[in-house]
Length: 244
Length: 248
Image (cartoon, rainbow over all chains, first blue to last red; front, side):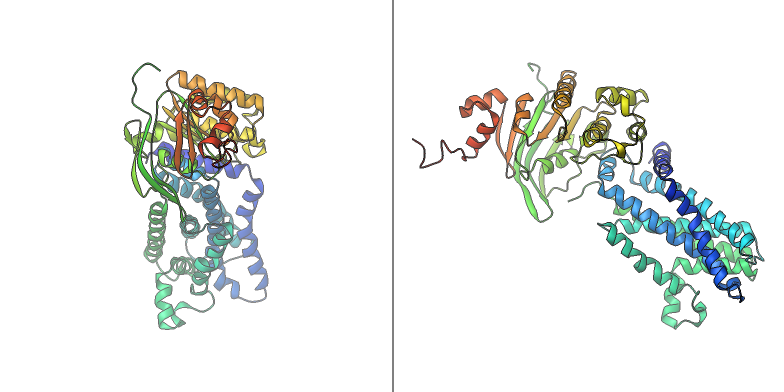
């Protein structure tokens, strides 16, 4: 692994996306528009103040998961991955290069989403907005790395899209949006304790209500980072220079 | 040709399968260095599997593949072997130059290399265009240009001239011979027999076996034929003139 090759990969992925302006617009604006829709739905009630923080975790996570998994699957299918792996490119160069490129987009996307939720939708944030953005970005990067990993197990675009309900939906259902996590049946609560999105939502809620101190939020952030590192390592292992 | 050089590739008792299909079953061959060697045979004869094994991206069941004196796929070979797959393995959503710039950085080749390979493949006029907007023939030339980056010692080209017009094909074959003249070894596959005549040496493959390993002229003499097509048919015993029972 060398920094020049990793950064060249990041630059290459960003150049590819730059040639596709529609994707950039969708990537940056769709989460904000969805958060706006949720705020509108609950505009006559106080529900948005409770679910709003979770929405900031949810939509960037889903969008980044989809975009990344499909982009990397395309790389596998067009033969460019095989070509790269026959060259002196480290597997880490590729995975990290992708993570950096989409991570950068995640920073923009999450910042826009948080800004939109706070200023336009009037989401009440008692804690630090900077910390809120940090958790949202970590969450979007998590979507990216899980998408990288998922693409290794898919052979077609149809399959990779099916991974979204498999990997993403259970995390949403168990994340405490539909029912607070402490009211879940014991088994489901234990599972939910292990899922990264639960911790992202917990952290965002804690920041929004100011109910916990920064140490708690940093602890939750650390759990998300551990998942990111795990997905990157597993993703590198699934890349094989030799294939059948 | 008089100088003694180690063969570019030595394959010994190679067994490999693609999916459930046993493609290579005990293949042995040697590819001389500094020549344009044609790998000729019908679709499904094992050309691509052999090429993938030489490049080191194919899982093999048993046997050895030695490339430039090292085991195929070893780290040091990754910048000494250029590989062109049948599909143009380039990024459609990058310009020609952006594609070449990226692969150049990956290979650690010099900046001037990009201009050199653009000239060699005659892509100067389309260097700033998106690769996806080019014709099929142009895209496959971009893929070839990537393989030329870093001036590899061995070029493995899987059907590089498919879909190209005759003028371009002639130009590419003359490029191949220019490269060989500077010491590069080339292995070029084709299922078009008329391209075989342009090679220095031929490997005729069928069902994972090498039927003949000869110069084009030697092959014609040995089979008593005047074109490679007929020579191939005679070798597989499917020539109507010599089919058992119908021979005079």
